[in-house]
Image (tube, rainbow, N blue to C red; front, side):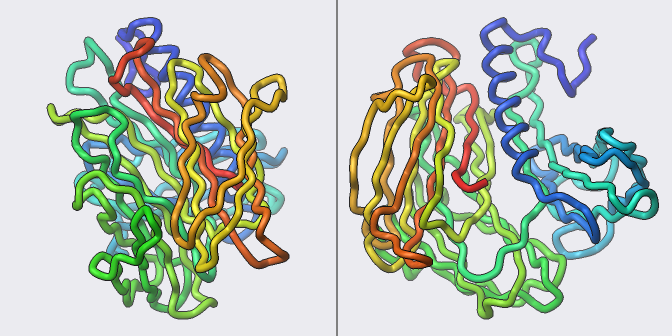
Length: 381
């Protein structure tokens, strides 16, 4: 018998390889990006919809350990449970949240240190798994991670994209999550732009009075079919502390799911830095470059392969609140890895910002149109 957590024994060899590659990539990317608890507390998120298994995984980066408490809360702030766990130096701990009443709900959790070394430094992520209905074919439909939240202040932005890379399948679900990490009610204008950068006044809305510690999830894009655009979160005050991320879920006509991943909102950067690219395991790789500002920006784009050889270079002008998508496979070829480097040539000092991310869609076989898995990487995280 195979356990659910690492049970790939019934999959075909190429399926196991592809899923393990994707899981390893998303786990390492998000664990490295997650916030470290050196003092105070960590706040993380969970989602019990779609029958997802939620596992909070924590690692202690220090030599000295301690005892920690995980307090689980629903989106409306009421407590669902409390769990204490010991985390030795360099140790790890896994907590399965499905032991609590999380089905058909979503929310947050706080992790605080109770006792032990004051030098303990832990990082935590939430791993989410959706199990397949027929385990004889595939035991896990998808898995992805949500790192512990990093507080934002001021304007942040992100890309929504409900386009399904597999033709003939439903729009990819996009859900924007907001969490109030402050001590006062959170209020913000959510501006929604189309692919050309035009403000969609009907879809833009005011998110008001989100109480401290609470979370709300909002449909963004898929309710209008397969579309692409940009969202901006404009808080009522630049002092408000909050977190935001966009989750994408790809359902099939038959009711199963092929992939899910989450993309934290970012303020953008004049120097976004490189992001990883890959066409391994039959992946289709798209680079997404967005301009979250009211001024047009000039992006200098470079694609390097695993040897550091420059494979492509171009300069594009991106209009305000719009974006540019680049199919990496055209330049990287098959079964290759590398870096996508984007420089904002028009940005000066703190003026001008870009968002850069890389989206990977894996196929089960060469030249197949069926997508089996997906994950994402973001520059600056």
